[in-house]
Image 1: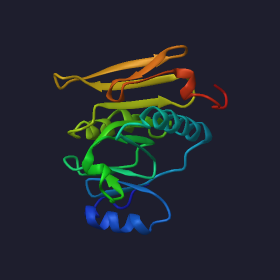
Image 2: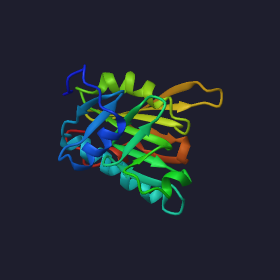
Image 3: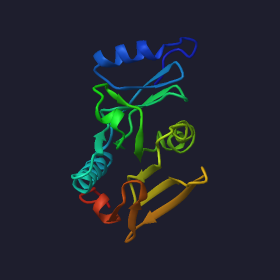
Image 4: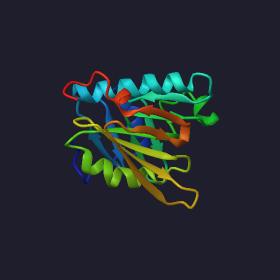
Length: 188
């Protein structure tokens, strides 16, 4: 859902409204989009990842953030609520803002209604982040994890993991069996 396309909202007005809104909205170049509720598999997958990542990063300065934190993409003029985000940047770690600016890894659990946007325009917006090293898309109805990894050359490569694979996220040097991500997901 979006407001009238001819009505521009400034980032400052968006943030002020979001702080008092009972529902979450994403912001993209002056337009505000209401977020729909997630289904149980979506929530279980995100919860599993938060647990796995927190255990792995327990002794590091990095923090794992859930879908209640926004990622600010200044160059793209966007605020997004990823399902899971990790930041290791001291500026984010010491900030009390309700958004981060320097994500290292971002995870989106795909929904049928958002998959095309998550793969296309949203990924293009995330590529403007100077700190992002990996963008991860997770299918909620079958074991499939697609990791887009930034190479030193500046290009992005994709690696897809499927049933029985070991998943690897280089940005945080994390490995696990794909089944751990899908643990207790109904129907999988």
